[in-house]
Length: 145
Image (cartoon, rainbow, N blue to C red):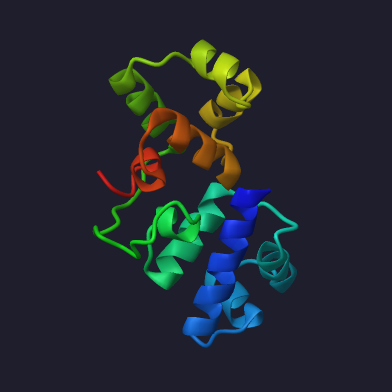
């Protein structure tokens, strides 16, 4: 819940700093106003593609958006590869197996199957994986290399 609160706080801060309403943001990134309002209250988890759309709209890193960093942006975001491909590449680089992640985190084996089949992960799962693999969220999703 703490992670979701950090995301909620950041969204509220950035809306205020940019003088944007929830309705304007929703229109800009192609989601419903109720989604933005629920993200602000911390009652709804966003999917990765929604978090990327927010980070792109505000010109910030995913790590900043999720409260994992206080650095707004220190790289030029690149087009991200499919999540599963990037995750597998980092797992190989770190020498970590899917089974190990299943044992040592709350990430279930079925999540890997879903991601392999193209499903977008929830942002909280991405944060948990980034923490576990000791990489930034932006590196994990391929926005920073």
